[in-house]
Length: 358
Ligand code: KG4
Ligand code: ZN
Image 1 (cartoon, rainbow, N blue to C red):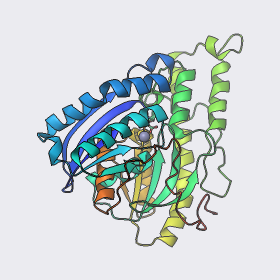
Image 2 (image 1 turned 90 degrees about the vertical axis):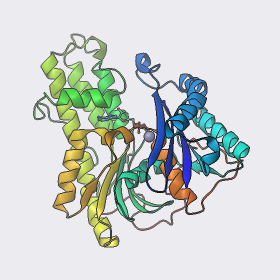
Image 3 (image 1 turned 180 degrees about the horizontal axis):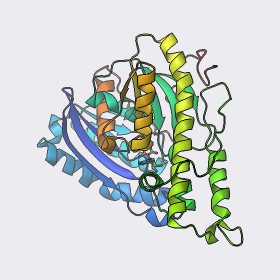
Image 4 (image 1 turned 30 degrees about the vertical axis):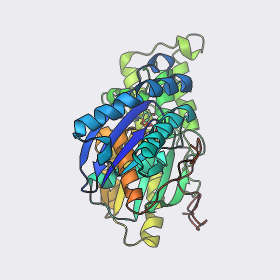
């Protein structure tokens, strides 16, 4: 069984073919550079760039796999959530291929791509506890099965990656901010500034990063002669210290809420063994280290996709497509792309949904 997957929901155009032996037969990825000078993704530019490159990315991926389209058993694409212009490009391409080949089309929830990706490279059984941390999302979920999720907590404002990006922007570090903050934090002192941990005592698994970001802003503004953040001049070491404090505090917020989630997960799903992290922020080595320690503390196994599969890519979409296709979940050709698409939308409202009480 071979599935082609296409990703185009944000600023990466990706395609991959995987099989049910967990082999990645071929992949291609183009990360759009166009957004760098704007300090964030510009939806119109992204959509146009996806349109320009998607055919070439699919062809390159097939060439690398040494297969032709007729060898593919199903075509999958990220059909949301995401920037709708880009999502439409991937979905239309996948539908056109499926129609021409007379093969099924599989609409993938982009978040499910992140959620299932770790299973491609690690022997992880359902159920598992997942921290999904990307530029647009920050959620703690129980992955019960393909298409079956229980959401234990979510951010009530910024996503974790968004907070990394905004802090980086304030420090003039460019976009995306996460990798740069991680790099500078390595030489910073994480005890230099004390930052708040919003919602720490809320008693549920929800998260908030906006107060943390504002506290960082105030520190940076204190370096400005007129209080305007644009005029702030920070010595190199101070930039590193801000990065280290922010990264440590943001990670600590995630770890502490995960601790609550683990208590709930271990009680409700005693067969579950794995703590998994995925999404762009899961590339962060400091965060991975802390999560590994956390998993060990509670007798769980920690797993994460390889770093190159944490940020958006075609492989995770192809794999989620394969997981869905082999369960018989296929989508009609008139499936409408969805800018918003909660992973747990069909889940019954269990006691833990929307916030586990500690
Ligand atoms: O999953 P992703 O590629 O796109 C979304 O679906 O949102 O995640 C992108 C996000 C960006 O906010 C980026 O700053 C963050 O992941 N990110 C990181 C790191 N690498 C990427 N955040 C922290 N540390 C990193 N090393
Ligand atoms: Zn993503």
